[in-house]
Length: 106
Image 1 (spheres, rainbow, N blue to C red):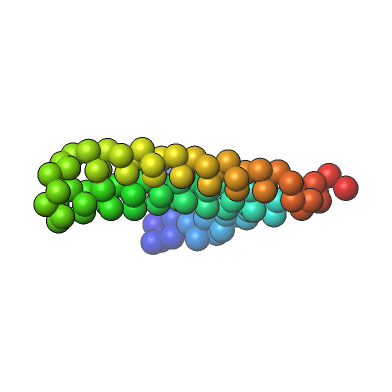
Image 2 (tube, rainbow, N blue to C red; image 1 turned 180 degrees about the vertical axis):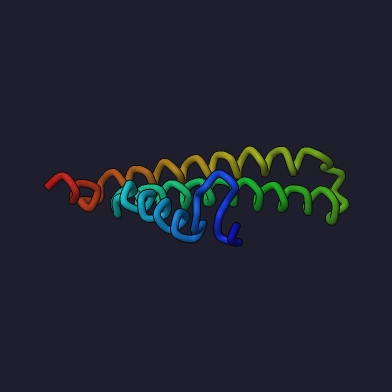
């Protein structure tokens, strides 16, 4: 038995992997890839807004000595969630308005 074959009789693992990758890549159009990328970008922006604002609230609670613990962090998390939601809605409205969404339908 060679090092490129399996006991069940299949051979050349690299060839099978490349065939599977080609099959997968043929199933995803450029428009779908762009849409997926846009979705990831919106999600990352949302999570980033919540995390950054939460960190700012935590820093206010722990480093300023104002006695706000845990309220500054709670308020900043809520504000971050609101800002992330607003940004996601704004971005999705912009994506819906762009004409390149319909280029594959022509």
